[in-house]
Image (tube, rainbow, N blue to C red; front, side, top):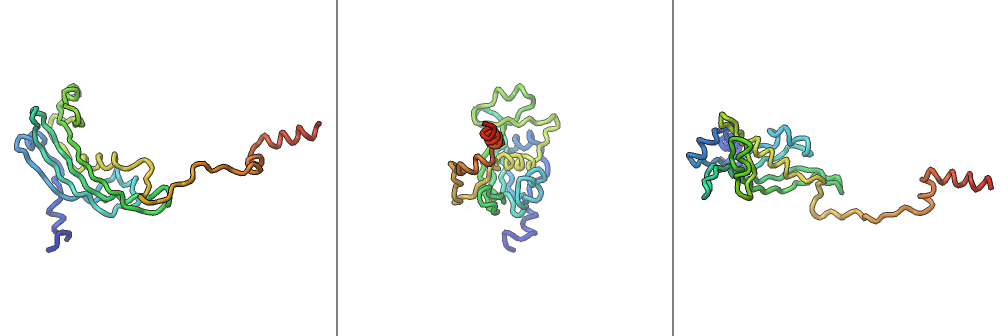
Length: 179
């Protein structure tokens, strides 16, 4: 069976939800793929939903005993280049460490380099939602395919066109006629 067959992909889907505190205590890791088509909030920023994100999720504590989830995400997001209006695959590689906190006051105690993740009283987290959040943040405001030519920024209209487009040019002509 090839590694990209549908049966193989089904085996490597991430669990839908996990108890974060139990996973940290057990120092668990998960790997899998998430189809882009399963990410409803991300869909609006994509040209289409072909492709997937390869994901690794690790639960652990650091040397300061801060519980965390580390996300490693690789994907090629199908975006529309704003210069050429062509589809292109935007490569994304993310490594994000989320410090687990029980309340907002815990955010101040996190070391530098950690993003806070507020975990509810039930301790449940949804890895797919965390991945989707990171991918949404990775989409550039203005997607531009590598290698596309920049648009000339210092374009100026000819003077005659500027005068024609100005609503005041008609007034100045009327004023000149009255003299």
